[in-house]
Image 1 (cartoon, rainbow, N blue to C red):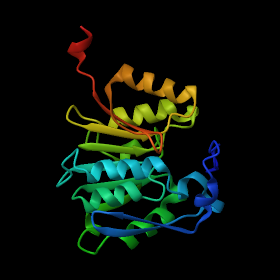
Image 2 (spheres, rainbow, N blue to C red; image 1 turned 90 degrees about the vertical axis):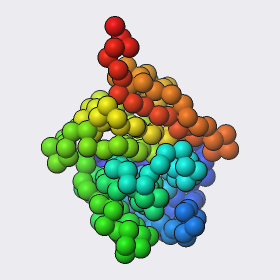
Image 3 (cartoon, rainbow, N blue to C red; image 1 turned 120 degrees about the horizontal axis):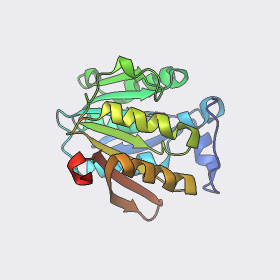
Image 4 (cartoon, rainbow, N blue to C red; image 1 turned 45 degrees about the horizontal axis):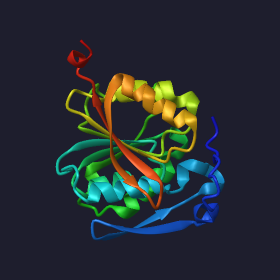
Length: 217
């Protein structure tokens, strides 16, 4: 499957064609390289990532010492911010995007924090054997709900990576009916609640946790 852009619904894609974009999180300037031309959606910063970074910075979750994984990381902005906030982060994407992802991570983390951030390949539903079941406290995803053909593999991946203690945070703009359908699928397997809504950027943040089977009895 090619990493190609999807319909941006008139957002104004000019910002995606900029070779670099700059943010300030955790009192640091973060400069993210973008490469829309060659990697499409995997190499630009989406609003959902910025909203999730802001949410994490506000301290809704204590990331100090937390074991976290970012799915479909793209530019790596969310994983970078999580590492700066004290988490041990595995930042993942498909193989084709890894070198680009690594360059952003290394450029934006000081030397003493770099060991806390590992870039690793993860194709949803395929190479899960490279990870331990339920090994992460926190699973992060920004704008990863957009291709219907990936939904089953994404759900399988979330189930595999989650333990009873794990928290999933998904930041997304609900563009199509299929996006709502994914949330319904998610709610069949996890307890899901909306934690935040950014009105300006039209981005939702959902929290999901493994469902207690006793709830269904």
